[in-house]
Length: 155
Image (cartoon, rainbow, N blue to C red):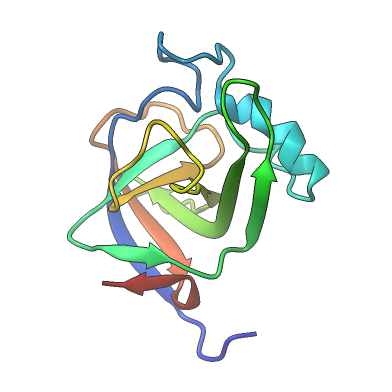
């Protein structure tokens, strides 16, 4: 276990995503969304995401470039669809707070590896977050992300 664990606070804003994870995009080959389809594969590998909404929050982290390191879960060569090759995925446990509320939500960063994900790449400052459903969100909603200091490296 790493020494001197601290939580790093990141300010973020909800931005539009590609609509593939939730299935809301008309271009999505997955009408139910990719997350709903992937959940049974991850559960079989030891990560139960059943408590999370079937989509991701696309959070843009302000004024920081970073690299996520030391994931809590990593899975290689996950063959979850016939539309493309198997993918590698990593997940980090985090806590988020939305719009200045005081209720923290246990959440996870969801990151398909850019090396195996052929389409729909994200900015380096963008984090895809799996969380419980949050009502009344709109583009521009503000978030605070808390992540352990041994899981992130600033550039």
